[in-house]
Length: 597
Image 1 (cartoon, one colour):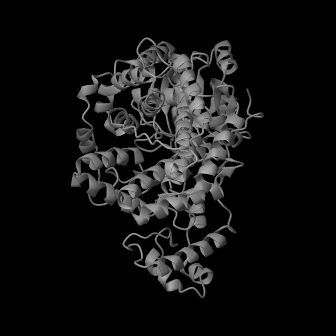
Image 2 (spheres, one colour; image 1 turned 90 degrees about the horizontal axis):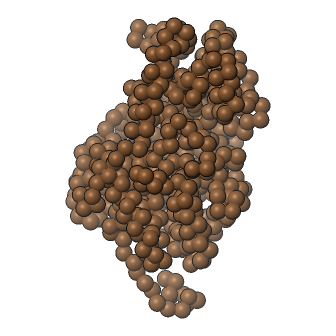
Image 3 (cartoon, rainbow, N blue to C red; image 1 turned 120 degrees about the vertical axis):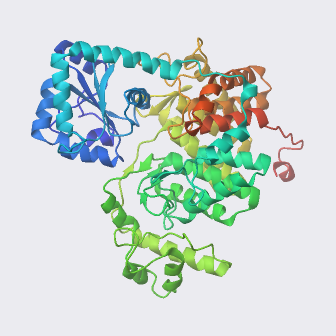
């Protein structure tokens, strides 16, 4: 109940807090009921910059901490350990006209139903933005003086959350026009710099993939222009780590110049897949190089034994920047004797710098070198800088192993190993698959993270990984495992009344609403991923039950996906698998190399 036995780095970062935090569970809610107090639920994660700022400014403030301890049962949740809670309360936040995100501070009654929400608030009152201390005081007064209104709000929010996740979202399958969907996505993209319009730009590989598949079908140049403008910005710009490989989570500006220095496992997986698909079409050397560099980063810096860590965390922006950036003098010293002027020209290194007076290497405005010798020199120089950077204090790595994100990485690396003929990548993906089962498996059930019940995404992403490994190795055990996990999803996660997969199982802790999830967050949701898994199982086994379930799933969410296309990329990618998949049968002896080709 206290934080003393926590394993989460986010929870452990608060173990010495002045606030008397509890962990989530029936004991904490029972304590709130017995004490006749509301709950203050704080949701965050280790890599969340503003979570840590709020911790320093508010939870370390004696006056605010005393207000919280005296008037609330404070509960701390790591959203990466409890994605079910995160999904539910982020939905509630949206209903209460809050943009969501982290940190998320939700005020609940003892039944866990929300009646007020806030995120990061400043340390002092501003004209249009109260301090966190003021919000806490206002909520104390509301609960003491108008509890009926708070509980009335909680009841209305509960009903609205139920409606949000479990309303009728269906449509007839024939009403889905994937080319029109891609066009609607393209209209939201920046034609000059790529990415969704706005000052802060996330990678959004699923939306790019929807447009990419539409381009392959139709040849529409508008799609091609948007896709390659976006990819050039990401792959040449600051969103990619040109020294160590791997993609940062998002850019702080519209031109992909300066990133937030945070690397998420799910982003690496999706970008490997996307770049591999583009390379298969046009043998784009830039995409091949970025895949190799990103897989190299994962295998070098993200391994926890045979499996993958969750993220490289984003702490203090200025401190993180010192790790990834260079002065011109540091570049010259590190690359002495290797024609450093060429590196500086290609990667935009100057005396004045481009990020807080230092240089983040990027190739915007510098096309790929025209000859192999030039590229070989730059590769050598990047390796020299990487060796030098390894001597610096690195940002914190979140070593927790998440089943769903590992499944995404395993599938991506296995497919890349097949596409680029890298058997060592396939072997690494196979070891990671077996490692996840050893660490998080219990029969046919999975944990989301060590000690936390598996959610639907865990089963879906690991089933997809299993089918990808079957495709590249031919080992039947992977098909058997995918079928077993699909059976768990069908028996414990499927909603028999309104169809679709729920986020948590029927035998898990039951929250105030049991939601189905359509929208990506930002990894693809279970109901999109399972369109792929069920289609592949149907084609592979000939079992019509898989195709029947898949068609039902597609029809269940069609209207809502069309209404909220920006958050439904995973659904559209899965729907494409359903309607446009082909089966190719190769007949020959299994041991014959030509059969394997």
